[in-house]
Amino acid sequence: MEKIAVLGPRGTFSDSASIQYIKKFNNDLEQIYYSTIDDAFHSVGSECEVGIIPVENTLDGYVQRTLDLLLEMNVYIENEISIPVQFSLISNTKNIEDIKKLYVQFKTNGQCRKFIDSLNDVQIITTESNMESFDKIKEENIGEAAIIPGHMLEHSSAPFKIKNVTDAINNHTRFIVVREGALKVDIANNKDIKVPLYIMPDNDRPGILFDILKEFSLNKINLVSIMSRPTKLDMGTYNFYLEINGDFKQKEKIINTINKIKEYYKIKILGFYSVN
Image (cartoon, rainbow, N blue to C red):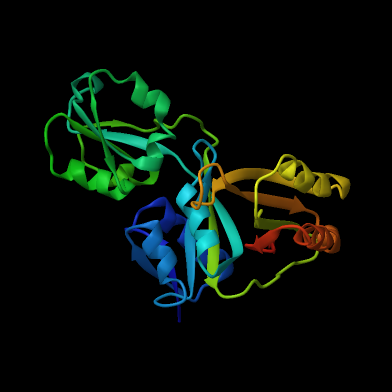
């Protein structure tokens, strides 16, 4: 049985994503939980055959550490899955005004800003995981509260609860499924294509980004995102992370366009797969 690396512990949104992925694509996977994104990534190819990693959230954008590790490590993306994400509040108080300390995971913070900003004189404690926040309230310290995954609300006996404190109803987190090794192209007919990649210029000059984007525009290829990521070599030098989304009939056109850009810039294609 293959193992899948999951950002744990049990009960996290990563856990929910892994359960959904296993049910939908591969029933023969054993979940192995890790405490950090780095640990989950580095387990792929050693302790686990695949990993499921958060990459983007509707409200809080891309997970920067995930983007960096995709470039640094010998892995490719074989699939992705998106799940709805809603957050609740639990508190060891009788009402919201009595909250003195709030535990919230670092990415959750950016998805619940309106609620957090509405609190008065509350100390914000950043945690590494939503389940760490959940466990803090189990200690039953008066005046303490936590923002937790909405699906965990029914498992809490805290005296005060608010069902939804998320900034938007239509909030989702997208997870990528990664494997170790060289890229494998997996395209199905009648499905859209997703191609995430890095473009890494050797030097900086005026017009680099324009030249890159021009090739995609001329070939009518849709870029759904583009981000500058520091090379970590010199100040002011950047790699470009892009995501292409296209119809399966555009497969050859996408490949030809990428090969054209490869004549001038180093490229790492991170995935070439079908999306539902």
